[in-house]
Length: 103
Image (tube, rainbow, N blue to C red; front, side, top):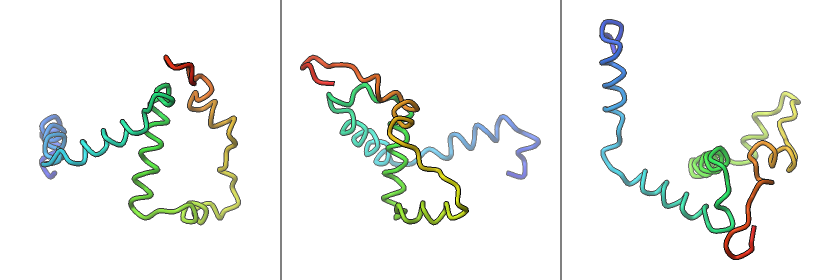
């Protein structure tokens, strides 16, 4: 990284290439998990919600819990949002019917 100022494009290229995992296991696992999430009833889930769900799953696997999140909010701030706000934020209310008449 000491040469990064002299070769900014090459350094960015090197970081992009050298950070590619040597194994595709992690990518395959993520695609498999996303496939499980996108069952027929859930196909209208937006990309932001899918990303949030995957993030929560990874935090859970790493050992973070709901209590950890609450401890981070001890300053008295209210970071809780209700179901309607969540639905508006991620477009959950816009789910469409599939071929089976389900939503």
